[in-house]
Structure formats: C-alpha cells, structure tokens
Amino acid sequence: MKLVDLLEGSDIQEVSGDTSGEITDICYDSRGCAKNSLFVAIRGLLYDGHSFIPHAVKKGARYIVHEEGVSPEQKAGATFIRVPDSRRALGKLGKRFFKNPSSELSLLGVTGTNGKTTVTYFLESILKQAGLKCGVVGTINYRYGENIYEAPQTTPESLDLQRILREMTDAGVTHAVMEVSSHAIDQGRVRDCEFDVGIFTNLSQDHLDYHETMESYYHAKKKFFHEQLKEDTRILINVDDPWGARLLGEIGKPVTTYGIDTPSDVSVSDFELSINGIDAEVKAGEKVFALRSPAIGRFNLYNILAATAAALCLDIPEETIKAGIEELSNIPGRLEKVSGLREPPTFVDYAHTEDALRKVLENLADFKRERIITVFGCGGDRDRTKRPLMGKAATDLSDIAIVTSDNPRTEDPLKIIDDIERGIVKDYVTKFNPEEIASGIDKKGFTVVPDRLSAIELALSIAGINDIVLIAGKGHEDYQILGTRRISFDDRIVAKAALARRRW
Image 1 (cartoon, rainbow, N blue to C red):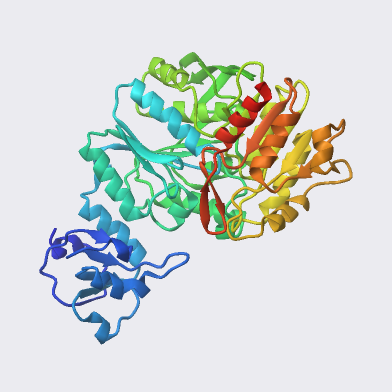
Image 2 (image 1 turned 90 degrees about the vertical axis):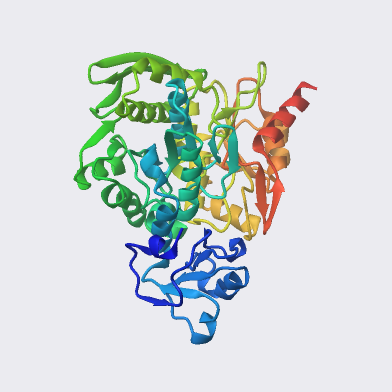
C-alpha cells in the first residue's frame, strides 16, 4: 500500500521526508520491522517505543510514526510522520492497512470481570451448531478453523487485532467472538473494530493495579458501550449486577437486558442447579425453551443467558441455541472437573478475584455433603488490595483452605501469602501447620504451603469421597511464573496425578 493512501484521513502534525513510497507492513515492535515497513512508536506500560526508533530503522523501517520530537540527526534515512497520539494512530493505520476486516463479518464483544471466556465458548458452540464459520479472540487462545494461536494477552494490540481479523475473513470466517479487556478499552485497542453485539457480564474488584479505583475501572467498561460501539450495535447487559444496572441507566442507548432476579428481556422461568449441571427453562419474549448444560452453578446460568441473548440478536433459532449450549461439555479451567468416579469431586477454576472465588465457592456450597477444601493464591506484581479479600472469601466459605503460590512473578511468594493472611479472621478460622492438616483436623482451619504442587497434593491426600476440592486461580494456564522464568505447570495435570496416586 502506498504511504499517501495509508495516511489519508489521519491526524498528522508534521511530515519530514519522502511520502511517495510503498509500505510492506506495519510494526510497533522494532524487532518485527523489515524492509520498507512503517514503525509506530507507542508508549507502553514498561517501554517507550520512541527509544527503539534507531533499531527499527536499522531493521529496515522506512517510515516512522511518532508523537515526541525527533532530532535532525535521527531523521536520516527514513520518513518521519508526527501525530498527536501514536497509539491512536496505530489502530487507525492498522484498520486501513488491513482494509477494515471487522466490517466483513459479524463481531461480538464480551466484557466484564468474570464470565468472558465462558460466554465466548458458549457462543462459539452455538454459532457452529448454526453452520457458521466462527473465530474466537480470548484469554485461552486465538482460534479459527484449524488454526490455534497462543494468547499473550486477552485482547491483542490494535494492529495485531486487525491482522487477526483479516486472516479470519480471508479464511471465510463469518462471525468472530472477542473477549474485550478493560485494558484494551482504556488503551483504544478495540476502538477501530465494528462490533455488531456488545455484552456486559458483571464488574467486581480486579486490575486496580492499573485502574486504581473501582470507579475508574467501571468508566473503562462504560467507555466501550458509550463511545466505542457503532450506533446500531446491539447491547446486552446483565441487570442483576449492580454495575450493570448502573450502566443501563447511563449509556443512553437501546439495550437488551438479561438476568435471573430482575425482570429482563432474556431470563429463566424455572431452573435447577446440581453438581451434574444446569437444567433451565429460558424465556425471551414469547419464546420459551428448556435446555440442559453440564456447566455448574448459578454464575454459569448467567453466562448461558448472555450467550442466548446474543444468539437471539443474530436471529439464531432457539433449537440451535439449545443444541449449541448442550453440546459444550467442557470449558478449559472454568470449574473444570478433573476427578472421576469414586473420587472426591475436584474442580480447577480460573477464579483469581475475590468476587469470582466467592461466587464459585457459594455455588459449590449448594452441593456440599461434607467439606469444601480450597487451594488458592494470588498473583505477584498485580493488584495487592484484593489479596486479603481473597483470603477472607476462601476461609469464609471453605472448611479447609490451603494458601499457596499462584504466579508470584518478581515478588516474594511469602510476602504475597502474608498479604492474603491479613484478610483471614483468625478468631474463628484456626491456622494449622501442614502436618496437622495432613493428620486430620475436625474444625474449620487453614494452612500455608508455598509450593503449589505440594499444596494440591496435600488437598487431595486429605479429601474424603464426599468432600469437594477446588483448586483456584490459574485455571487453563499450563505454566507458572517464578521471577522472570515461566515454568511448565498445569493444575489439572498435577491434580489428576495426585488423584491417581490415591487410587494406587
């Protein structure tokens, strides 16, 4: 593409150099630059792309988009285009370079603290049942057809997003479902995507290391619905969630509501929850249909309603919706059952916020016969204020809680555990050492086992056949981050091995 065509309509403050050439590619990481590419220097959370301009030129970049001043000596050998906001320019240039791929398919965006991944899985299953070609961009991976790519972050950078959507449309994808993170909204990564449906699941404390306050976190979500969607985008909101009810009253746009307790456009007239799944009668206007899902818990019923409401917006028949939901037997790391017959019911879940952990444990409590044993930790270099809250949630709702490491990253694991312990009310939850837990206790308690593998093994060694074991925090992740190293570690594999040792 010619540079002049790419820059058409862009907000440009100053151009220095030749603008008549052709661009082979766009990059924002100087390591990915090649001959005749265009490098966009953006400020990241850790690094400033302006520092890498010389490296980009050395790698072959011929055109540089920047927002800071550049000295005359630096401008040798390349064309420099100054803009007021290079991150905003990255999205616009990506959309133009890849020919606005989101306009060629139906794009559904799901945002909220919890439930995004599960809703996208339900929607993917429904769309496939409808005979449609579907792509997914989310926390677990980016996928379409036979192509599966590792997801370095929930929502890609704006340029990468446009590239992925172009690959999808070229491969014949007609519908794409995307998890939209608050970081992505705040940084404008999805601003240049044309969404046909936008879904709000819920909001609870998370990412305050980035947003600082819940109000700021909420406004990031609100920005998506209020400013970044098309005028004709169908908006779906969970109005049982208090933040969802607030959003409904503030965005000033037509909304389709869903919920269980609050009168809603999509709801349930009857439902039953068990350790084996969900039986529900869904009601949407005059449409009423029964469905069954192996997904467990009330929070998953909300996820089913969100996916159902979105599918109805796409005019997918209710019998296809029913078949799609019932077809989905497993969602990686989302209350994923890893135990078999004659073993303690054991679940691995991604719950890594106080609200998510509390909701999972509340749902499991409905099926409790004897004890609930929970293994959990908190991530390092992330929101520290949620650590004591998670400690309290786990010990409030578990009979035995085993506090361990999650992804400590560059923090001291024992310091993270100390933060968690500050939330535990020790007047009615006794701290035991691991040996005492292993030998058997008959009262509510917790212990600390910093090594995650040992913590999981302890939990499953003490669990009786009528106990429920929850291993929370990492879900689908098949790694653990210790310092700056990423080692192989999968809660599901570790738990299955420990369960196998019980059988032996």
